[in-house]
Image 1: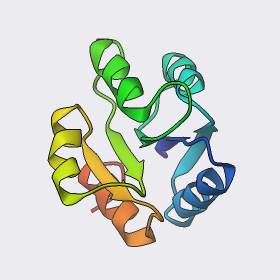
Image 2 (image 1 turned 180 degrees about the vertical axis):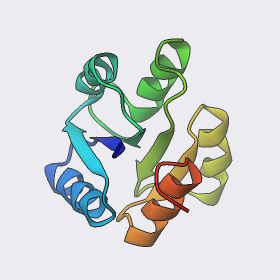
Image 3 (image 1 turned 90 degrees about the horizontal axis):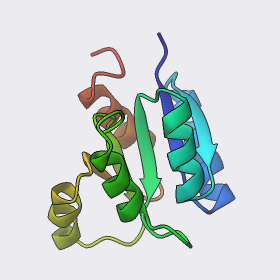
Length: 124
């Protein structure tokens, strides 16, 4: 079964770029433009991983991650923080907050592929 990644970002260009990367490595993707939509989708569909922007209006990526981790029905899905605004000291804080990995925008093909392979979503 081909994994599906949920891409959550309020910026359409960033969502399209991430979807293109997914397609390039043979992964299906769906998109959400905010945290509320993302939470609705993760309760309706099974995703192999979530690529989650941190800075969005309304509900932040960290809040979305916290809500997913608090829900035992969906807490196991890998969540990848996806941001352009991160310092090396922030990475440990994000991992402690429940994210499984951190990717820096713009996402590079090989970095995303490496992370998904690490979650077992791509063949070794």
